[in-house]
Length: 327
Ligand code: FES
Ligand SMILES: [Fe+2]
Image (tube, rainbow, N blue to C red; front, side, top):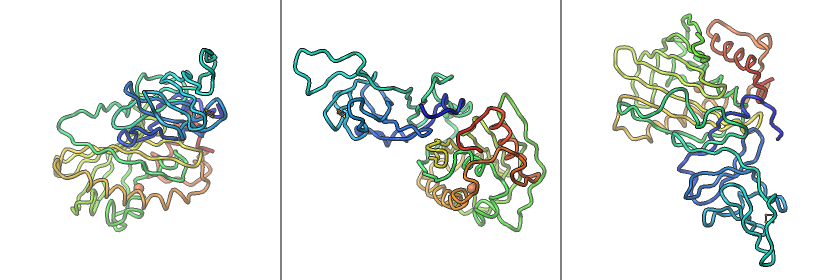
């Protein structure tokens, strides 16, 4: 195991959208480790993406009768990672019991397939405390968005309220209204939560209406964050979660879930297409930030009052000793 990050190693990370894992095995990368994910009638499974025979990725193979078959010589592994068949072996010989591959915890929840490389403290993945089953809301699952930037950089960009008026001008903000009122960051049950921050938004969700929004940001875990957004003068409520998969130190995949209590019948595609636009706008910024790894030394960059949440986020990462994607 190359990964030494004591926190991220033991967390659940989303690696695929559930709908994208069908009968073919898929190769993914988590914290620099190559992993094969596949689906059987018993559920989803994750193994080290390496056949123990000659080091060929199992993701090149296929799933047959609930087992994964290596593409090179057909060695076959069951859902527990034990080798059950070596086609070249003469009949009657017993497969050595040490012929097994490294397995990882794998689960399917909230529309994603999740992996934990270490020992997950939670039996199943969580996204904050949201169970995503409130019948008054509709939800849209979005991603995967490949981003060539460190996970903490991607997260910090999501938490950065004062970029809305520049990077997303005309949509999420207007540079003529770029002042950010003072807000505080609170630590509640180990999570960071901001006060409400008012932002004027010309077209906040792609439907062409300008509104004043009240943002409240939350940091649930190092790479799981969200904001709620209330529209001033209406009952409209919107919540967007970002969960970032740390692929390598400087590359990530972003997944999102949006919940809202309005426009209940509008097709998902409107909201996904709009998010696609926003992500492309953010990509130009985060893929070019230097240094690539998020500096946790608060002296390393200049901070303003409106950056309070970024400061609190960097401090939190330092305190829990996140090393992957930080400097
Ligand atoms: S390398 Fe996989 S069966 Fe030989
Ligand atoms: Fe953004």
